Image (cartoon, rainbow, N blue to C red; front, top):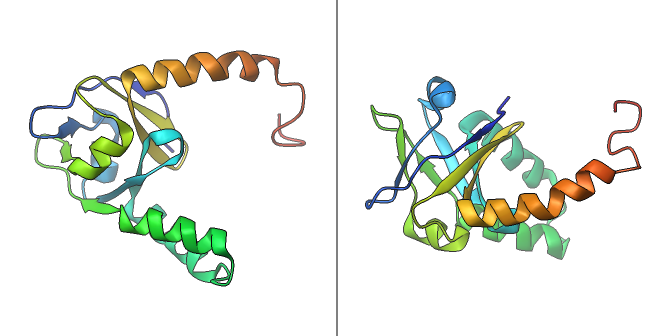
Length: 143
């Protein structure tokens, strides 16, 4: 499970340090792809394989499934962290997420998300009020 908020910087070669507490779990490899709200999703290989299987069993006749799968897989990049725990984010993914230098890496349960720091601050400012006022159960019977 991935938790927390971290603030690494992107270097001039497009590399980013993974949070230290997740380096061992991701040492064998990971997959980076486009996520919603213009962030990047970082999946351990096993989790990416689980999602791949779920999309494989989804009906190919559904246009939304085809559209999502095309963008999701076409933009995916498998990466292996270097010995210092850095990953290289491909230029197309950096551009999609608007990554320049200051980034935010958040834990989002089964994945990490990489955000441009300003985009994350804006998103969080918009969402925290709604989160604090949430009157319906998101997970009925759990929260």
